[in-house]
View 1 (cartoon, helix red, strand yellow):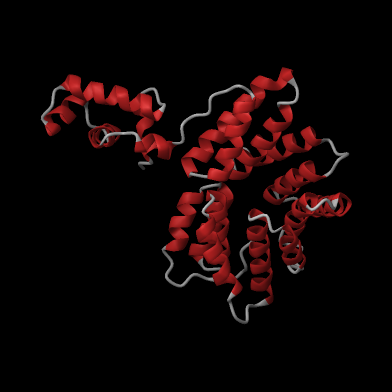
View 2 (cartoon, helix red, strand yellow):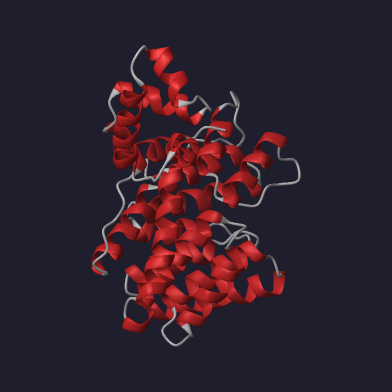
Length: 304
């Protein structure tokens, strides 16, 4: 969601993190602000929806709806955020109505409306809005909105080159906008599953999206990826949060020590156990976490 010229530095940083796909870091930063702006609150809601935290999203949406006397720019952002919340909770008629209130071509309200209109069975109108959004995005020339517009067009327009548009969107997002890239990768993989010759590419795309969704705890995305992997006969990886819950307290302690550079001997001396016991705990922890060795522990444990 584009920041206004007067947006505070913390909010601009939060927006950059959200766009980059670093949802957890963005949420931590934005929630640390004791007096969040309208910009911050809409970004927080976006993060909640990405993580599937629907109860918290509903609460944040109510706070946005209660804002009194917003500026025109703020009112447009609130309308879009509430439209996205309505769409995420299957209130598509409300989503379309709120999206139409945005009235600001700098915000992708047509994308939200088009996706809800498709679910309501209004394909012609959905295709028109998606095409208009794509035209605007191409004219603007910015990669992020263009990738989003291409993704929406591929989702709702019947006669476009779906694979071509998704590949273009993926090329724009990959390496720059992690969440959008993972979403597009999942869409593309879903399309490729229809052709057996593209099975290996579909699995590769899904594993990439799965890894990202797991790191950021994005349950809606993770659920989509899991379903597609199962359709392809592939075993989804156990989510990191579930795997962590399976570790014993001793295994978790040893993993944290190992991840921060302690040798097995140093860990053994610290805990007053044998080196073989440390090795045993680590090997079992690796299996539970679905990793191959200690080099992967900092990422799994989310250590800096």
